[in-house]
Image 1 (tube, rainbow, N blue to C red):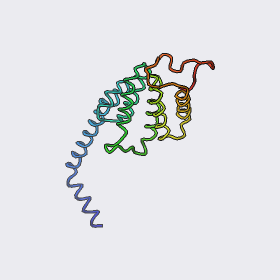
Image 2: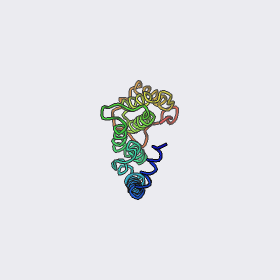
Image 3: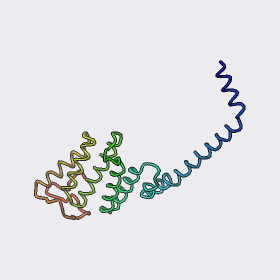
Image 4: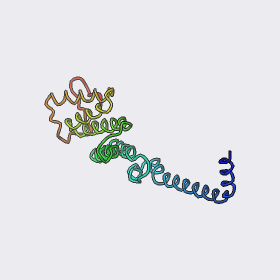
Length: 181
């Protein structure tokens, strides 16, 4: 009981100093939150994903992935490839290990890379990216389907290394336009 009384007495005697320290801590937290909003959240909201990724706050892998998707949708496939690769690098530790909680994101990145390579008619690279996606998410049916499609295209004589026509990535054969990618 004496200990509790001593603590109460200590707090009461130093209440002003404790209040000042609490106020300073609150201001520091508010400034940190404001910095995070300006450096990461605001660019993410405005679509400036690369700036958000390079801000040093927030999830840079997610920001690079979003930037890669934007480049992919704008048919800037080389840029998308760089951004997806940066997203994958941001997920891994300095020792090259991928934390277990990052596997779902790694699977999404590899799947997007596979689609990106396919758009560039780089079938071998696309197949490898789909394999990597399946390594991280074995139940991904889209990645399985696309990998099988790449294997069929490669087996039918597609070298898979040329730039291809990004406007017609699947081509159209006797069975109509290709599906899946």
